[in-house]
Structures are given as structure tokens and as C-alpha cells.
Length: 211
Image 1: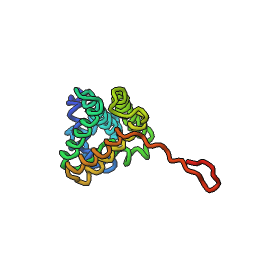
Image 2 (image 1 turned 90 degrees about the vertical axis):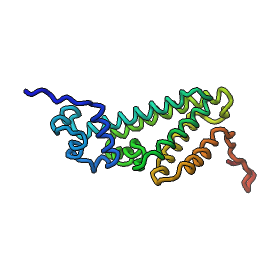
Image 3 (image 1 turned 90 degrees about the horizontal axis):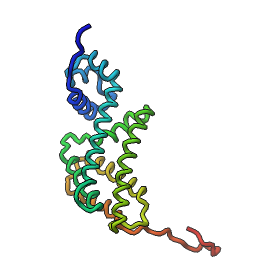
Image 4 (image 1 turned 30 degrees about the vertical axis):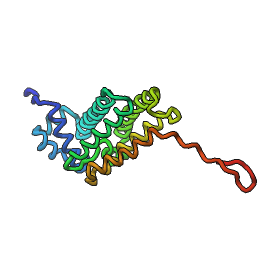
């Protein structure tokens, strides 16, 4: 047997990630991956088992990078609320710097691959849940020091922040200017400091209280 070909796994994953990210899973062939990574098909299959296996490895790489960046921002030496604002300002910078307007690889995967692959769907959802939990923890800290009203459930606000981040990425793919994205982010984040509205109660024609 010949010696297995040695290669830099991180470099190969990065090259494959960029290809999948730009082209999409379905439109990326093994031949494309061979050309991008400079590895022979046999070496790719030996290392990752299949095109799908390589895709999952790149998905994990991207998600771990996103989570690391989120944690870096939320751990900044600022007040809890300002660390959340800092994360969104950094997110906007990354969106603007993406000249190819590729969007979010996790969201792209959820739209293209996850509907037909339960394992990948669950994988992406687990990553979203991880990020959501980190937001919730930071919101609770902000509530503890009075920056965010305590009558707003942290878990619900965390889901809202995840929705905001997805929305900004999608808007960024339409090449919105940085100031416009920041303005949208400011409006969305202002919700965090608002007192939750109470449901309106009124009397119907029969004098029965209803909501």
C-alpha cells in the first residue's frame, strides 16, 4: 500500500467551505471539490467518506466560528447590553465586507439542504440553540443590572435577537449600505429596553371582559 497523502485538514476545510458557501451544496460536484482542494477523489473520500461528510465538516467549522465570534463579543469588557450591541456592530461589519454577498452559511444550509436531510436540519438547529442560549444568558445579566426590563422573558428576547441577526444577513445580501443596516439594528435592539406591552382588555357588546 502507498502512504496516505498528507494534507492540512484546516486548509482543505476552508477551501471546501468557501466553495460550498459560494455555490451551494447541490451545485458543487466532487470534481469542483477536487479542483478547489487540490486533493484526489480517493483522498477526499478517505478523509471525509463522502461529499456530504465533507459538507458537514465545513458546516461544523463555520458554526464553531460563529459561536466563537458571538462569545468573544459577549465577553467584551462592557456592560451586558453593550456587549449585545457590540456583537451586532461586528456582524454588520462582516456583512458589509462580504463583497460576494454570500449570506449566512447556516441559513443557506437550512434553506437548501436541511428540508431534505433531518440530520443536517437538527445539526443546524442545535447550533442556533447554542447561540440563542448565550444571548439569553447575557440578557439575564442585563436584567440583573437594570439595563433590560425584567418583565421581558430572556428566552423570548434571545429568539428575537436570533431573528434580528438572520434578518440583517438577508438584508445584507441585497447590498444595503452599512448605515442602513446599522439603523435597522438600532431599531431592533431598542426593543430590548422597552417595557413589554400589556394585552389590551375591553368590554364586548354583552359586557363580557375579553382580550
